[in-house]
Image (cartoon, rainbow, N blue to C red; front, side, top):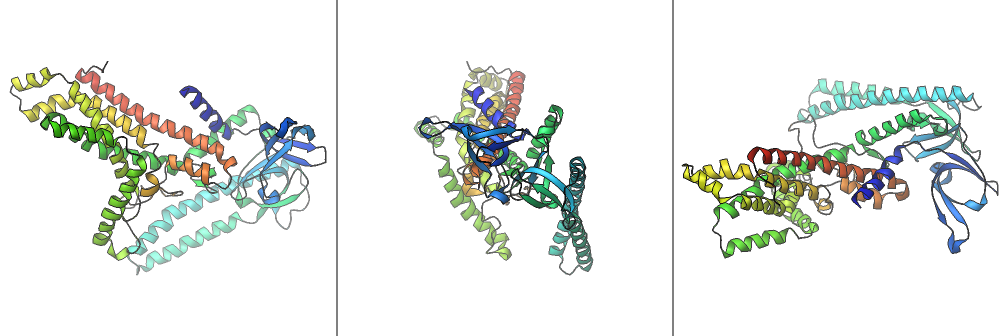
Length: 489
């Protein structure tokens, strides 16, 4: 069942990046539609079937999906000249490329191959201009803005900022001007500004090798870029970074407290009624719904501790909160509380499995209780501690409900780590793969179009959890072999 589930997620998620063939469908009533077939269902009362096509061209038709009765289809063709354009606005365009040039000059059709070659060259030049613009914003504007925030009277920084803005303006002007004259399958024409086109391809004319290269590029962009168009397009890099960083911070917070609590309960505390009650309470905490931890984190961490920190250290920025709102630190602390019982129980069970003879032998050789605990007992219990961390990571990485209250954001393209002191910004909001799946699947403007991205993000979340768990499992086996601890039968 697990293998079948992963195969389903991988097939539907990774298949989204494959440049599927585009067909031109001619109906018996004369309508002509171009698009990709998605699925086919029976009509009501079992009279025939209908097929769903993704046709794009939202700016022309107002919608991108069309149900067509299969029995009314007169002909289906795969013209090699059909072009698919990925745009910043209005989604994809599917149709024919007529010409490329200035808006005033583009009126008549140009030779097909010449227009396609010019389009590819212009898109490559636009990619370079966009990269240069982003570099200027990252390396020029942002440091200068921070410098002016620290010293508003710095005239040199003001001149440099004006020059950087002028260069960015020149780049934006260079990106504008040229348009592509496009034609839909039913003959309607459209002037498409090229600065809004990200990529263009002709899937029916591509060889398998070219399709494989395009698929690899699509997967890489999904992993390396940020989201756009309401999370229904683009990549998930900020969500990957935020998920991994939050899980690592949560592990660093929960491990020492969980281990210390387990050591106290098993090695230090007097074994009696109260200790057993504490153990029962810890096990019951593991079954508390996660949203309750989110409410606790919102009240105690965000409003309580965070509000107090703002009053003490950031009073000049109030009423705009710094720590008195959800952020990476409060989300990590909330999930640390959520997973603390798991670490305590796993570590205590590992301590209980260590033979009493090990402790007695160390004491007989003259070791103190602290030396016995730190040099004999705890090293042998490391595999059990890592088992608790593995379970904690597996649970925390997929939690969404508490994050809704303590720091996750729908869109946070700026990751919490950058070159500005203190480099790790614990007060910032962050993106999370689990919340990205939830938001894209239920709150997107076009859920049907976003479903492939939902499957791809779900597969990525599973892989992230798998990598984190395999790292902990490797460390557990390493310490188990080193200290001669046998796994529990």
